[in-house]
Length: 110
Image (cartoon, rainbow, N blue to C red; front, side, top):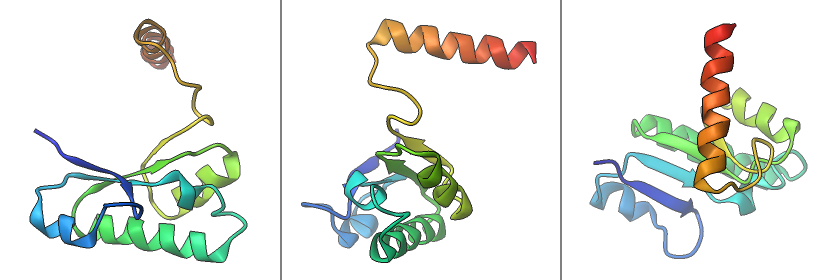
């Protein structure tokens, strides 16, 4: 079983949870990701969370990725996972199945 800490850095998420629970994945809240290309403080926070997550052997997911510039910044920081409108709008189960099927078929054919 895998456990993810969603919206890390906001609300009730706490650094103590990283020790108290067997967390596998940190999801960086979109409120930090939104301005990483224009706000040095947000960029620093996101970089620190990515580094901390990697040091603790966790996967790190950036929420709210909407632009190529945000994705480039996250890649520079070695954040391997992201979610947001840059990749796709929200989809119902049947649509995501079709999308993933096209990705797998497209990859296999290449």
